[in-house]
Image (cartoon, rainbow, N blue to C red; front, side, top):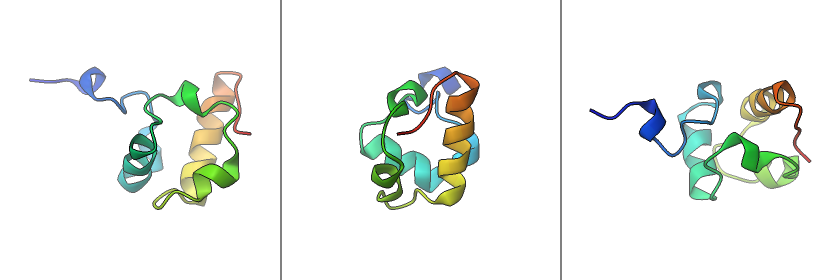
Length: 69
């Protein structure tokens, strides 16, 4: 049986929701660290990534000393 670490999106916060997770993975963002410096407008343009997902991602990055662009 696979555990959460086997999922490519395992590093993305669960609080962003499934549509946002699918959109990010489809765009090639499979790890939270990859989002450091990515413009908010670029992420917001992805279908499924809304204000809540952007807030959660921003908070998760801030906890690691990183931020969205």
